[in-house]
Length: 131
Image 1 (spheres, rainbow, N blue to C red):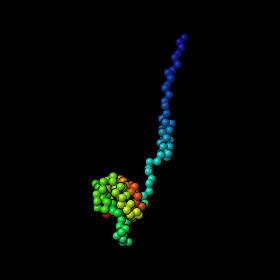
Image 2: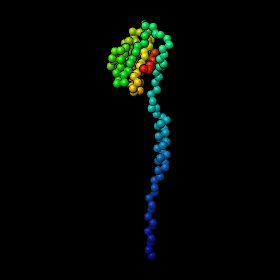
Image 3: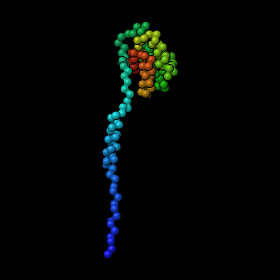
């Protein structure tokens, strides 16, 4: 009498469905728990030519060129030194308006960086003007 060997055991397959479910749950959790944006508010006023501005209250003009050059009242300013130069002008006349005029081909990120420097200088009235 011969004893038969038990049939070979099949290896259990690992199901990927529970693994995929766990990965998606973790993805949703981190998407909801994380904040990818830094919300900051900078009040801007639309430029309008309805009312003439008195000479003693003339706004400070900041011209931003497409190549990154910045001019404050027709004087060249270092890209990182705008906040210091504008802050000195605003210290002389607090409450003075600032008009930022970007060129047409200026990347939006550069404009936002300039607006951040204007805000750091302490400008309370900022106007974004078109060409």
